[in-house]
Length: 187
Image 1 (cartoon, rainbow, N blue to C red):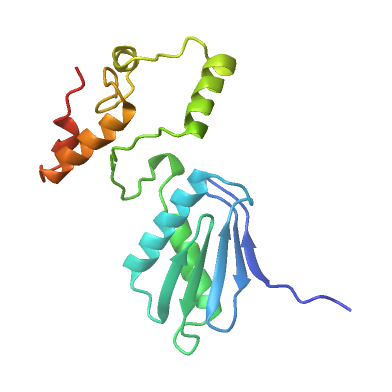
Image 2 (cartoon, one colour; image 1 turned 180 degrees about the vertical axis):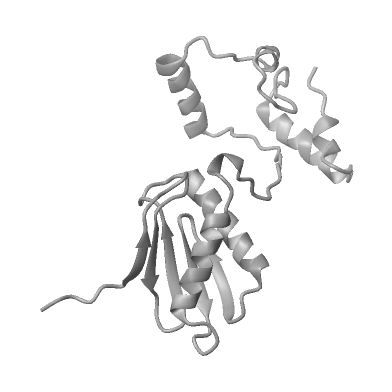
């Protein structure tokens, strides 16, 4: 007895585009999988680009998209948009996605002031210095010369807990735009 397959159609990888597999996902959904089942940020950028283009295309009968890491669930109204027509539209959109080296996704850089002063973090730093890189920079000046971005350190404080208390005091002053962390002095 032959087994029914959830796979509807497949496209091989071509021209820097990943392979595409279309699968049944119930009566109203189509699962679109990209590339091999590996953790690859380039695949995720491709999924994000496809999702954006699908939303911009204004496809009649499209209900929703739900992008995943290397896949996208696409909901559609089968009375308005047949599965075959949806796949054809998606194929066109896949062809329209720029070369992977040209992909950009909307993003932003968020800097959070945090401190890791617990036994596991201290043990990990000691192990790193002992096993991996004994010559690692250990003071802010060396880190700055190495190009490592940071706002402040706890160097010179009598107790590392003073660092957290000072940060909390500055934050309580309601300084705007992260200026609380920049106002700390650890001379």
